[in-house]
Length: 249
Image (cartoon, rainbow, N blue to C red; front, side, top):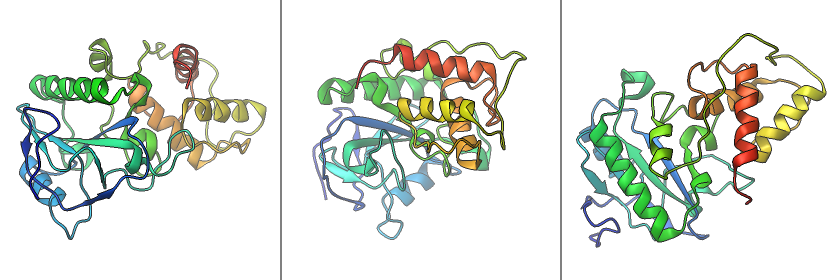
């Protein structure tokens, strides 16, 4: 299938892995490819047998391929949830960013690549009227399964360019923490705060494995100085700042 790219400088490399959307577009999800090379990632994302795709693939030199028309539902999010919505594929545009990821030698994202991601996200957000708070990491919508694009991804740089929600993280310091196996109203309050932000956080009153996974996902995106799944004072304060500065839904 050939099509006219939605982003004018993108090269079309069509993927068969898409179907019809079931809801309006109101989100952008950023991924890393987690493969040894961009060429391998392109091959997989356009392979019908793989049954996975994204709308865009951004290379380390800043080149961009469009694999699926934005009007179509690309298969990039998998089992995921945000603010109670579970069909993330239907409401989102998926952007894969070439990086070997944690499994194959996670490294910093080159400037040219980030510049391209910013330009692409700004263009999509303007055309689709996507709010900053709806530009998310794959790990935000699937904290039990995914780490991408990871703690090295420069979210602060994107936010400075008008892409994504960000506040300055509270500094890591010694103090009261909530940690796995803790129980009680403080844990429930923490879980409710993550749920208010959008994470799939069940209110169990127990700091269980799912809670630790949500905390780690939050840290990767919003407090990357230390990613350990423990809700230290810095994590809790940063979470509060985000909730207080986030625009209403």
